[in-house]
Length: 221
Image (tube, rainbow, N blue to C red; front, side, top):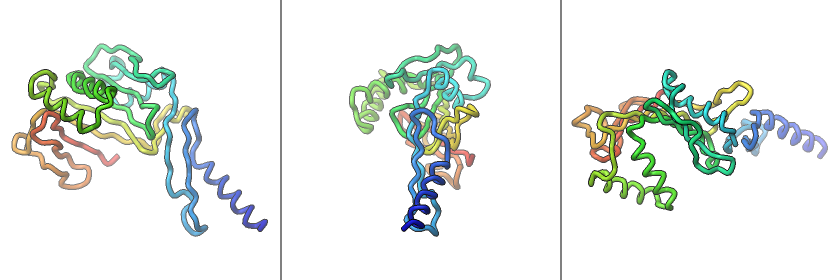
């Protein structure tokens, strides 16, 4: 019995050293049921509460490096409410990680996408489901009420289910990039792109022929 107690204590101590915890961020480790299996079976990261300066710094990591100094940044106040953290003077808009959701995600997109993105936020705030939101935006885009980009417009995503902000290094751990290039109403015929990736990490066209048609690009790293 004493040997079992000591072993359990060792496993708990080892799993607690997997990664540091920052502010509200909690990294939970689930111990396996057998000693012969890996101690860490799954890691779930709950969001951190970052101050305005940290939100701006991490949100800008999604943007092209040469656009970061002048990009506009949205984020959240201490109560988790949406707010403008910094005004910008170029064509990029960045959004900090949402403290009300698990994992980590920041995005940065071309300003020509803002009408579509802002409308989506309005509809979510009204309690619309994902399907309802898309139906409304599609109808408004078709009628001309919702402005769409007149040229291909990119959205950059820096994300990770198990990603978190390391306050000691100032870096995001376990995150990766994805790129989305919106071309409203684009098709396979108009772009020459497949509707599914030819191989992992290859570009492909999603939602062909729709108002939110876009090229998906998911680099390996």
